[in-house]
Length: 73
Ligand code: FES
Image (tube, rainbow, N blue to C red; front, side, top):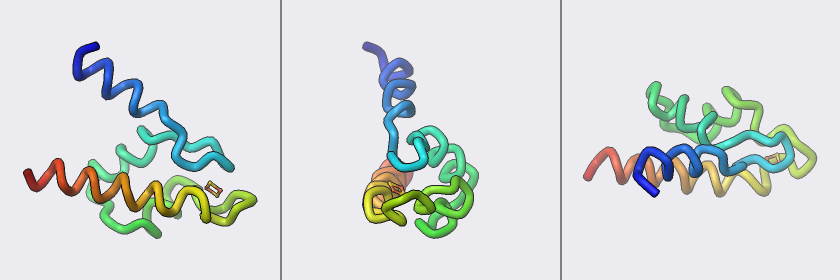
């Protein structure tokens, strides 16, 4: 699997299971400059599902940290 294929598959991973919001939806906003979890939740609708963000908030924070690390390396 090449890096482009890996990127596509990673993008399909569901971050917010309540609202079925995928990683690629968050990455689009992160690449546009968003750096705060709450901004990402508002932009995507994540956190408004039945768990009220208990499931996805830590995953969004991890995604932000990973993207920040990639950007800074
Ligand atoms: S997993 Fe996102 S609101 Fe429940």
